[in-house]
Amino acid sequence: MESKGYTQDGTVDLRGHPVLAHRTGKWKACAFLVGYEAFERMAFYGIASNLVVYLTTQLHEDTVPSVRNVNNWSGAVWMTPILGAYIADSYLGRFWTFTISSLIYVMGMVLLTMAVSIKHFKRTCINGICKKASTSQVAFIYASLYIIAIGAGGTKPNISTFGADQFDDFNPSEKQLKASFFNWWMFSTFTGALCATLGLVYIQENLGWGLGYCIPTAGLILSLIIFYIGTPYYRHKVKKAESPAGDLLRVLVTVIKNRKLELPIHPSQLYELDQQYYLNTGKRQIHHTSLFRFLDKAAIKQDGDRSWRQPCTVTQVEESKLILGMAMIWLATLIPSTIWAQVNTLFVKQGTTLDRHLGSTFQIPAASLGSFVTLSMLLTVPMYDRYFVPLMRKKTGNPRGITLLQRLGIGILIQIFAIAVACAVEVRRMHVIRLHHIKGPEEIVPMTILALLPQYVLLGIADVFNAIGLLEFFYDQSPDDMRSLGTTYFTSGIGIGNFLNSFLVTMVDKISGSHGGKSWIGKNLNDSHLDYYYSFLLVICTINMGIFLWASRKYVYKRESIELKVGCLELESKALDPSPLGVPV
Image (cartoon, rainbow, N blue to C red; front, side, top):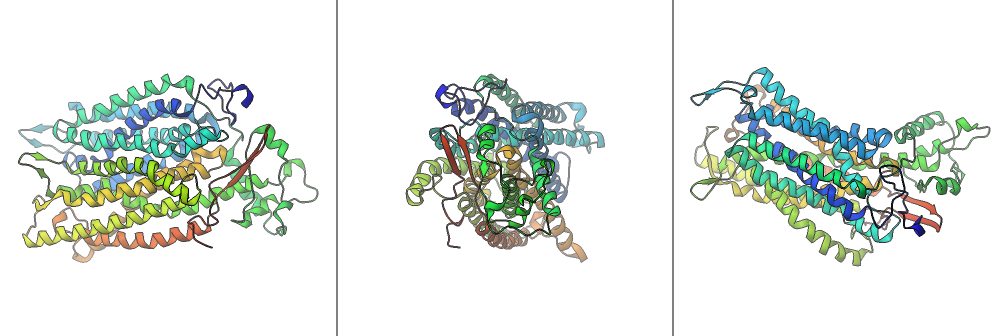
């Protein structure tokens, strides 16, 4: 197909026809996608950044229940993509799953805007005294939030994956462009988040919650219109397996059936289809690795096997190994996701106790300090892509500069420094509280809110390595037919991180406040011990770093090849170092 100007990876248009490489895909197509991503992130962070404030000031929830509810909702937003990715990979494809889910997302945003705007859905206030919101009003708000979570389940795992599909892995120039794709994709994400934390949060607290939610809703609708204008330029991956998830299940079942069989001495004795099959189907063959050797039993050839009882292929087994290997790394990223959950919860409540004045009249909304996370990301991404990567590429020979796991490790290490700084700042805040004999929950601590700035900036820099690296790692290492499902490792990790934070906050509050003790995370943060909680997080982060280093040393990058008409091309997924972290094994 290359001679006719078609893409070499077999991508097609929406009608299933082969597409011309020069007319479709690349950044030309992605330009229509990044607008949606920016507005969607603006909508999400416009809600998430200030939701704890809305729940405590408008619905009068206590600190711990409000933090728990924010974490549970955020967790749902990041967990529902598992279902959305499965539907995309197995049934509808990325484009149509995204289309249906985006409409659900918009519906949720419209309902939420109504909930905070229309008098009937809001609590009533007379002479400045407001009644408690009714059960139906609270239920309507939470129903709107969870409709958004359902919509996000189909959009989040598919939009970034669909964007990466616009680059042909078998075209060297496009493959080089793809190496920077996730950096600049996340740049658009950060831009949307910045607009939310700087602009929307201020509008919500000073001009009204209705206007603060109406703006991202209108932007989301506009971005969808732009997305569909770009339809003629999009490339669509052809599904090469009837049920990718079914192949994983078949491997596990076959391993159980063959558990008593002896593994052959050499991997070449395992069952694999010939090269002609991969040439005809365009499916990528994955080479054998030594990781999780027990799964190789699914590919043992037995005498008398019938066609319907054929063993699994080495490629199918290796796909299962990839999923297990990524799960190993995924487990080591749950604690970093828990740390990220502090930005929209305890960091915000901590900020509300401090002096937020800039000048004599202007007050910084506590949630707006999260914009410095985004600003540090926006400044660091171009520096990383334009300076750090070329410099390291010369030293290592790796197209990405450093391996994907090295990138994650650096991000986790910076995050440990961030939580250490947060702990030190909280110790200082408690010292000022004791010095001025502050006890009341409404009393302002005479300490500038800008003291929290270093922890926000460090978390932003950490995310350039950590969050972007995770998204790229899970996309890159996923089996070809399971890219959407593989990307949900990224989203589900953030989701479980939020749930884990919710669990930790609840348990720490109960245990520390039991037997008449003072809760570490009480309703009155001026009479609590948030510094103890941050110290606890610092300890588990340090332990988790050791677990990540161990998992990284065990992980083996995938190696795949596909035979084209011009010959056999082998793709190594950046396994340029014998050890993922670049240390001798």
